Length: 470
Image (cartoon, rainbow, N blue to C red; front, side, top):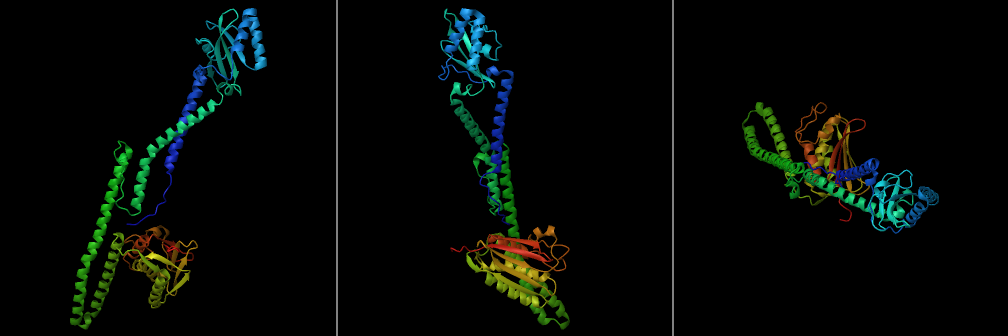
């Protein structure tokens, strides 16, 4: 099975998106609620405090207003209020015990309700709106008459800070922290099942066919996430079954065909000794086809061993320069018979951990493919380069053939796939490049094909180099 190396994310973007959107939504809902209530009924917005405020005292205001009213009536009260407005910048309103306004000035919204609140002693009532802060308390006039005094403090540095001190800042911070914790819990509850499914999907894509969503907290839920987890497990089990069935089929067919072909080769040898000269061309043709079938079966077995994980262990130190040089020499010898050649260029050392058997098969398939399709009188170029970071060895094989249509480049390494149109004049089984892809992926590398500049095809193989410390 092809192993795809997927990028692993340290934190799911979905989690961040859900967290931010929930946070913004709750914040917007609270803001809209506050604004709406403030517009339609600002008296119920804000806080009602009953303890005596330390930072402001209403007693002098109340006592002065009550004395002015009892001595000079409403006229004296209005002069007193106007003096307070000029000197202190606040609006004062005096009410009798029944809640009737005695000053005659326009009342701010909420003042009438505070005036009617049954306060006792020096208890202070506070209400905050967007425009001002209202503070009310009960006072006793010089004649022993009870009054309610309401002070309207305009919004500014004296409106909130003097009344609340710095407590409102900490209250706001605490509210934001609570809001953040709630949104975090909601976002985590929504995205943790998706993250678990993603981790299982990555394991499955990396070649672990036994990967499943195993978290019981997800599978036992009664929502779409539990259905997603169970459906993924069913899909993974089906894929595992199909891949194993495919591997068994390749293995069984290859083994079952080998025995008849072996007997066919023996019978062909006996028939050659008994046949007359006229039958020899037919015998030669049978022998070539038999050899072709043997090569095909060998390729099928190789592919089955790689995909089934029963190939040789990848623990050998392989000198790629020596290996590719040997492949290039053999390919150049064969290419000379058809007026072609193979040239090798090496840049640096190249050692990988793996198995020379699979690597030879992988690289040789690409080189022989290039020799087959390169134009007569041209040379196939092979480059072995150690990358500057020292972590990768790059092998490039470039021919001067007809090239491959761009849509077909990504399908060249599929099993039994053969490129139509441009390269159909040469027969092929569609297994060579598939073996190359599987062998390279088994070594933790990658393989890609490109249309070369100036015509032809270039195949690049990247393999992880042996660390220098080793």
